[in-house]
Image (tube, rainbow, N blue to C red; front, side, top):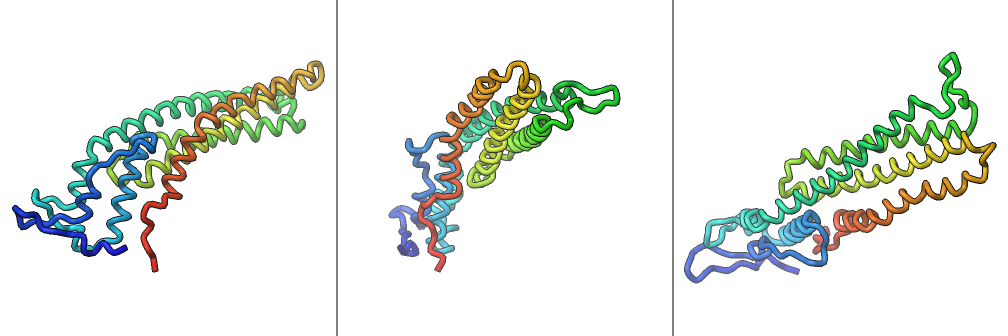
Length: 246
């Protein structure tokens, strides 16, 4: 493909149009869900074509004395605003969940199951189930904190055009993955606590309670996995006019 010759003169002006001016115009697609991903796809398409054309065409002005990049900015102003709103709405919802998990697991770390002896040592310290509780509770705290920081990074972003290309999607991917692990770890910690208390007198209740504990994790995975997969594919596996690196 050779795009070096894609330029022409307007009949009424000395300014030239080229293919980048056309690509810079907004062309929303119904195949992509979410304004942020649509903006990402528009940027990918523009940069892919930009990598093929001659550098001089990147600064060429149209009849309104606008470069292709200026046309792109103007045409996608509304899409940037919609993408910002979509990102902030998603980040706010996930931030609320992450804060709740942090609150729960942080409190659980200081109210260990079974309590402490007079010397402050946990009573069930040497039981394997207590070790599972401690590790999963700590992992839930760390992963939920990391998730919270990622979503805060989204909320405090500048929301420039370039942020939609990799920065914002990458933060959203990391935030969703760490949030999933924090929920799963919290459920494991809950299961370990139930096992400590009920392993002897009510042993038969452990299995149904553990299965119920898997419900929130499964629901979160089923609801968020399609979105996460779409964001990952759009960010790291996009095949839009990959430039020839030969």
